[in-house]
Image 1 (tube, rainbow, N blue to C red):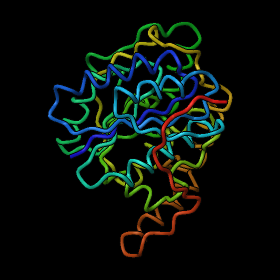
Image 2 (image 1 turned 60 degrees about the horizontal axis):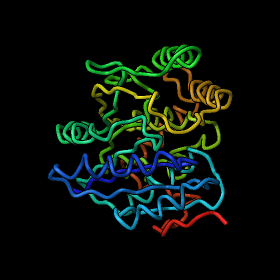
Image 3 (image 1 turned 120 degrees about the vertical axis):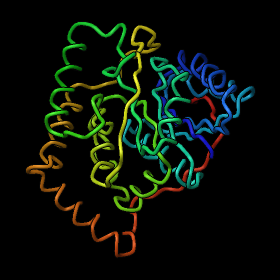
Image 4 (image 1 turned 90 degrees about the vertical axis):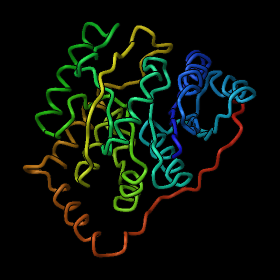
Length: 284
């Protein structure tokens, strides 16, 4: 089994020198073969230069966007790369790159996958979970978004819908790319709504979910928040209109396609771009 640790990064010059060593320290004692894949989404600070410096000490695989494309495309490219590089039995863990999520949780995520789950989410709402440093309007927005997502998408085993720190069984993501193609993440430019979209699409495929308690350390964040509240909220509302299980027209379309895919060849994927690891270099 190979573990892929996927890191989408945009202007995280202060976080990557802290987070990367943490990941390697956390995983060194574990009997795991692992690969760290960082997707630099057109950073305009010193993120690329700092990653290049870290590559002298750590075997980091880097994909570089020359321009900023947003979180949706960054995660899409990283997932496609890991799926293509991986094989059945592998696990893909996606983390934020701002040092708010502790990589010490990764072994417990992998253990939960090995117990038969397809997606394991680090959750603030499970025993041992919580958050620090999230206050005021951000706290209220987070709670309101959580209530909305739970009401629109009641998924067994899921309470923390907005946590992007998750482990995925390789076969589950491979199946999603086979079925949805480039539509696995449709809302590439609507803020952080792609985080919700992935679990909605995987639930339609029959994925099994569970959560492990996690403390989100927002007080350790090394950069300004990149979440655009307007586009993200619009993305949540659009997902509810399209994929709600009671009236979502797009959901019914994909459920038919999923049923057909069980007896027909997988549809051709569109918009696929070959992605190769590269040596990160500073923006010039």
